[in-house]
Length: 195
Image: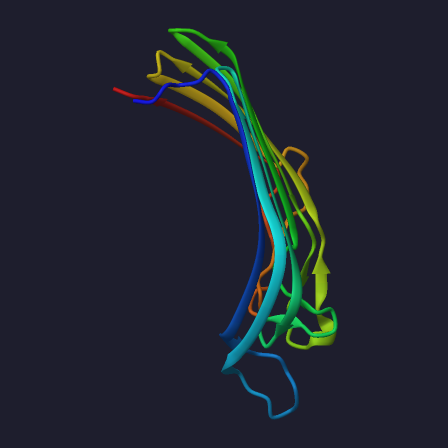
């Protein structure tokens, strides 16, 4: 086994360029009165972006930060909005932050407080007619929880998701996926015992 360090920090950053051609896409846009649904194997998408993460952990404290940004260079016949020059249903910026603190840590007891925050940028919702496409707003969500463990056998936890009860909508890449309202604040408690 390798040596366990008491604390560690690492990070990673990546730049990327993607070029997709011959994407097979189910088209449902109304172009004229005779238009009907069809598949077309001519989708083109070019994107440029950056993604990264940073992690820290020690005996009592740990954290993680991750981010993603993507810019559409060109998009054609692939669930995109021609006038806005973007792919629909995809946020171009996301951020995530996780953290945990072991407030009590000994041979018998462990009490850990943890939290999560996520940001998702706005995204374009695809509709049957391009002029009707609209943006689904950005969202910032917070979750928090606490967990108690006795001798690593008895575990009890309480979690609260979406603490601020923020409106949250999920949308997809084509007109079959209208924005769907996601649940608001939720509480969950669990208890388990490992034999």
